[in-house]
Length: 135
Image 1 (cartoon, helix red, strand yellow):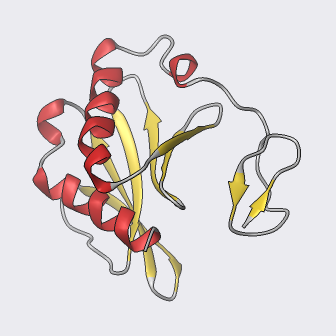
Image 2 (tube, rainbow, N blue to C red):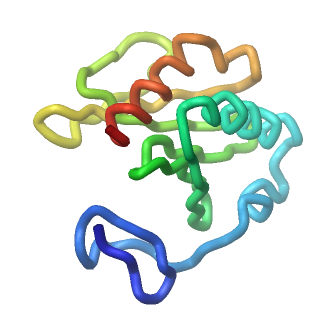
């Protein structure tokens, strides 16, 4: 693990490229509809049962972090884009895109437009990503 001497964020790779600009979660939701923040808060509430989680932020994204990052949350005007990695390719609805990032890992992108979209299938994927990354 490597900690950036400027922003104090922790990364797996030494000297990993990143932006040291850190904003508060509230700043990321400025000018976004209220339901977008409510959807994010519901993800946080449900994810709390997995274990210790902290929040890392950049200019346009929030990361949920256990020992390692397991979920990227990108607020949009119409909802949230979330991304999580699994050890297999689950290219089925509601996944809108998958990207192989290593021999055994695939990032899954999902668009959430409402609280109803945050179903048990999505939460199972998020939970699996948490335990895959934080064993």
